[in-house]
Image 1: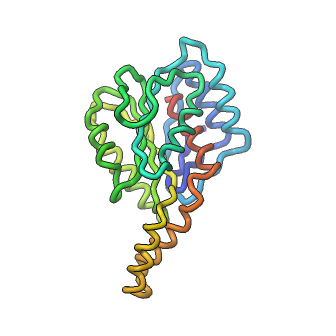
Image 2: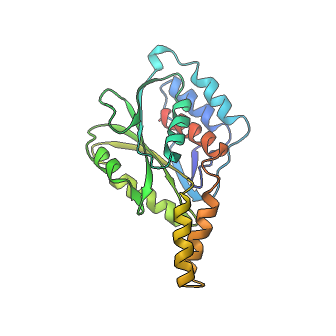
Length: 232
């Protein structure tokens, strides 16, 4: 079945998708196209992620790809997702992992992660992306707000727009990430000055919803996202 990806508070895949995707990767076949749908929750079919990781271990040396996973993380949320993506790349050679200063020249696939800064990726990530040439790229991000599907769809478009056309963006994945307490304090102070302000109330709701993220489901979804990207 085609790969279905729910983006925002996570990403939803079809049953057995990750295992099928990895099977396609082993045979160097063409995985089905990624379809992105935005929503506020992410769940995978039972045993799907485990099956994907077991399949990853069966790769032969010829099937191994050189993978780079680089990111910018302000509060640790994006770093958590990066580690999960690394786990989803079992069976492949990780040639770079960590901050964006890592050399990714020999990588065949680059996972690039960012926190959300004013509705787009962080400046250091923009600079990194704009320096890529002829690369296959997968983008991942954590964001504190995700109350509407439209917001995450717009994030995906903005992130993609930072990648020069000579590169290939295989897919994008987003999940919520907790914000520092100072953010909530600022919104509360503003709401005292503007009682009943709908925008501020929505921002406080988004803050509270993100407090538990990234959670175990987000991390499992990130591993499955990695498997899907490896199969493309």
